[in-house]
Amino acid sequence: MPIEILMPALSPTMEQGSLTKWLVKEGDIVASGDLLAEIETDKATMEFEAVDEGVIGKILIPEGSQDVAVNTPIAILLDEGETADGPDQPAPAPAPTSAVPPQAEAPSDDKPATAEQSTPATASAAPFRQPNAQADRVFATPLARRIAADKGLNLKEITGSGPKGRIVKADVEHATAAALAPATNTSSTTSSSEKIAISSGLTTETVLKMYQDRAFEEIKLDGMRKIIAARLTEAKQTIPHFYLRRDIQLDTLLALRSELNSQLAVRDVKLSVNDFIIKAAALALQSVPAANAVWAGDRVLQLKPSDIAVAVAVEGGLFTPVLKDADSKSLSTLSAQMKDMAARARGKKLAPHEYQGGSFAISNLGMFGVDNFDAVINPPHGAILAVGAGKKRPVVAPDGSLGVATVMSVTMSVDHRAIDGALGAQLLQAIVDNLENPLTMLV
Image (cartoon, rainbow, N blue to C red; front, side, top):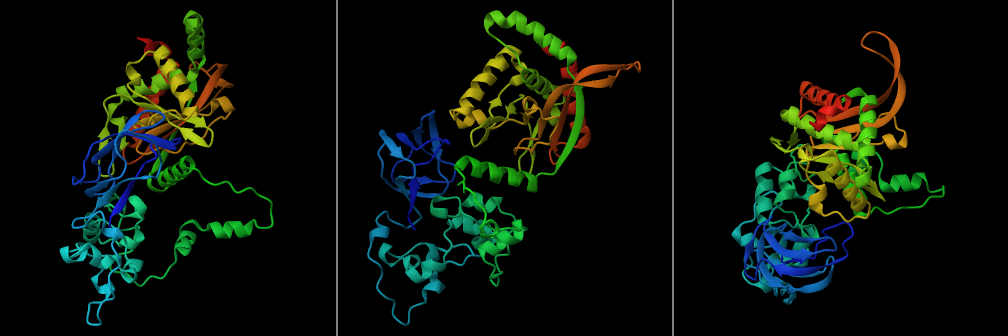
């Protein structure tokens, strides 16, 4: 059936935008990933991609239109053989008793749609618009149906990400046969709430009943918190984490930092310990290039530049702005760029390209007095370094004498699919060497 293309929310704070330019015209055939339009938000002008395939049947909002609210229909996308005025046609007359029942005409969920099933003879007689047939139909693109049939997946078990919940190619490709019931199995009667209860142990209703006699405030999840919950749940369930821990002596670094800051004061530059950590990680990825890797589903991507993501706490969640080419930038440049991106992150003014990507992340809770912790990998990153506070501790010198040093504990969480244990240990050793011998980072 014709589906509406809606004005997207291209940033966490976007409520409306300007449709600057259409990149397609009526009658064009588009596929998932094709560029549809340029949309100006409160942050930047971004390109809007199609999430479904079909034909642009009608453009509802002309280019140049301003203040278009999010979720406003801006165009109509059609399947092959459909017309833009199809939904407005009167409902078909009741079929004669000799006609094929509607449920027989609707495409099967475990078979690809045939020409007879997916293309109505006329817009007013489309079988899938009959109420009885539509009630049980799973809305999916023909390509998604074919892929599901090839993989043996049940479309009823897949959540669609297309307009109005329509299942598209990407939804089926990301689904796994192990997580879904076979397409031929239609005997299950387990309800959605029961499935949630099985997987998580507690449903929303169960938790509400548990605390019904206690005072509480119910806080609805905003888009950012939902994304964080989904991504980190996925990370802990699907990424085989392993953890490497080291103590780092900071006294030499702190002395160098103090000296540099006194010299840079005239330029209003003040380096932080975190700036040195960013630089140390970036150079370590160049020293151990095999660890500069991300997991890409069925392959590993080994990056050439050192793009470091740094976790920044914001109201209601966090952002991870990415400092690109951090290995080739000076400490003062990294410091200025980090301060700028952190400030804009807290104001939710970062554009998507500024917080997407990277191969390695840093999460520093030392300023809160945390000694050490284990961070969750942000996919598709290969690793994340959790940084604790630097504190005075007794240490044993190489000659066996006892002394006091400022020691910082770090834990590196590593994706074992992309980085093996020995390789991860080499990377962490390189980070330690850079921080304990900071002058080498200035050469």
